[in-house]
Length: 101
Image 1 (cartoon, rainbow, N blue to C red):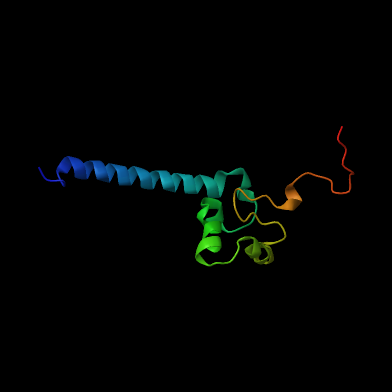
Image 2 (cartoon, helix red, strand yellow):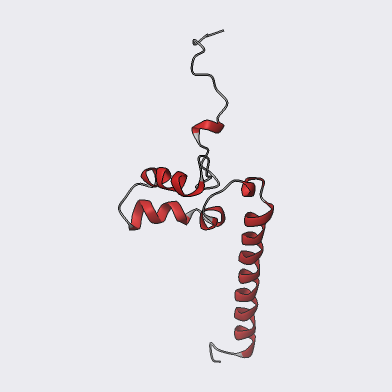
């Protein structure tokens, strides 16, 4: 029995096709329908977490150092990644004294 029998080939094609369809649907949902989609920023960063990893690992520069460049390109409040929340969006008051109550 050969490893490339019609049943094996058919199963492989179904797997590859369904994986491609899943990735396409996740990409469309993240770019157009995600609650953070209205914020400016790179679309590749909206789709995948590998955008930050590219700058941290492959280019040997920190992704945090890329953020001022993104702000210059996309405005004062870009969303450089879905998991990244700029300090401006975090609700806290720096001038309020700490109270342990």
